[in-house]
Structure formats: C-alpha cells, structure tokens
Length: 82
Ligand code: SF4
Ligand code: SF4
Image 1: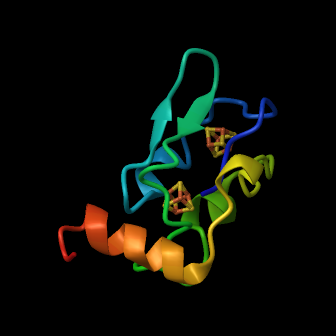
Image 2 (image 1 turned 90 degrees about the vertical axis):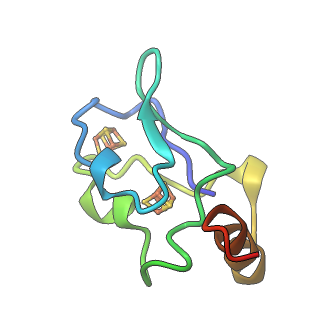
C-alpha cells in the first residue's frame, strides 16, 4: 500500500482518482486505507494518486510492503472476484 505523509496540503486532487476508494479526508490530512490500496494493481499500471499529487507526498508505506502478487490478490478480494 501507499501512504500520505504530513506534507499533504489537502488539495483533494487524489481522492477522486482512486479506483478503490482507498483515499479519504482524515482529521488533518488525507489518508489511505491500506486494506483498500492495491497500488492500483488490477486497474492501472501506475498508482493514480502519485500521478496527480502536486507535492509528491505519497510514498510506499513501509508498514504495508506488498509484492505484485499480494496486491493482485487484494484486488481480487475487494472487487468480489475471489
Ligand atoms: Fe488508490 Fe491507487 Fe493511490 Fe492506492 S495507489 S491509494 S489504489 S490511487
Ligand atoms: Fe494531499 Fe497529495 Fe492528495 Fe493533495 S493529492 S490531498 S496533497 S495527498
């Protein structure tokens, strides 16, 4: 999964781009639900939120490191295909 750092400026550009609805507004900044973030595997070749973030504050979440197979398995589960 990816994560949003405290450099987030709450611009709201990323939230509508997420195909998994993993992004929402948290108490202070936007947040990514690691249970829903597939790093866009299953939908796109590149993480869409990273593409649009103007301050480049969406790195990999070191607490939720996953390989492509694990991300695809997550995609299949949350999309109801597994
Ligand atoms: Fe959503 Fe993709 Fe960003 Fe994860 S990487 S939060 S699935 S847009
Ligand atoms: Fe925050 Fe970047 Fe999302 Fe804007 S696009 S809300 S700065 S994480």
